[in-house]
Length: 91
Image (cartoon, rainbow, N blue to C red):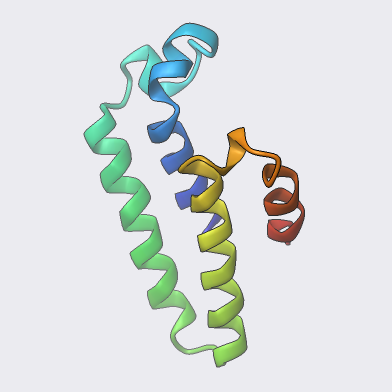
């Protein structure tokens, strides 16, 4: 799940990264935003396939981790809740 969260974070932050983190792959033009979105979503699908044989608790915790991580990506990082989200998402 962390791979999808990291890739989709770069996708969500691509406009900011052009200014402040030019070394990131999207900002450098090494990866297009569309490719990053595709790979981020593909990682989610791959991880769910790998999690299916495991028990429900593992799947539930992974889904919770994914929700927290993507919530951070989609805007919680700019709120006071970001510290809580980060702390809860720690493996």
